[in-house]
Image 1 (cartoon, rainbow, N blue to C red):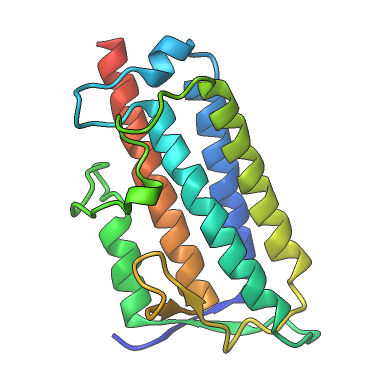
Image 2: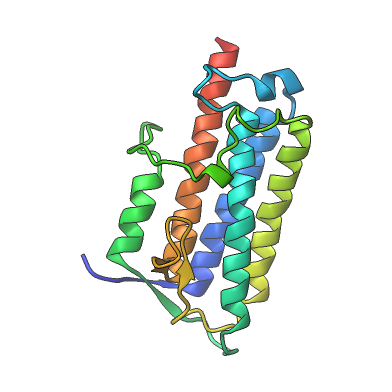
Amino acid sequence: MGNQRIHKNQLINSWENHVSGMRETMADEFAHLSDQALTWKPSARKWSIAQCILHLELSHKIYYRNLQNAFETSPVIDEDEELSTTWLGRQLADSLAPDENGERNMRVPTWKALNPSSEMKPIKNPKLVLDLYSRQLADFDELLKHNQLVKWNGIRIPTLITPLLKLSVADFIAVMIAHNERHMMQGLEVLEQIKA
């Protein structure tokens, strides 16, 4: 129930595998789609594939900045740290992650600034959105590798929920992975409806 431990190298490998899977899914499932298919919405209240990816892209801008700022203030060490995950971080990640059947466990409201809803201007270049997000995943990968010798223990990163709620690096990355999987699954659900 308490803290669980993971080595920094294991966490980086987990992130790299996640990034590889996300980029592969985008290339295999979304890249060949027309702009019309990428922007098709199952209903007025649901997001298109491009909107799912745009939401991730908008979120990642903030995630990246928060993580980069945290790394800049942390001292350099020369070892593979053992990192802690907390009960709260695991609960947050579990609430965002799709279950084994691909179902999203709970409805989570989206910040207005991160909501690519129909109130925003239509997405004019959905392929660019896919490309930007793919590059952001690679940038995150590089950020983690570049800061591998920075002390990660003790770093607390503000969440998008509230700046008062801060997560360890291990929890933060687990939440990012769950968030990515949630919206990638959402995009794949839209794709299934397009194919039907």
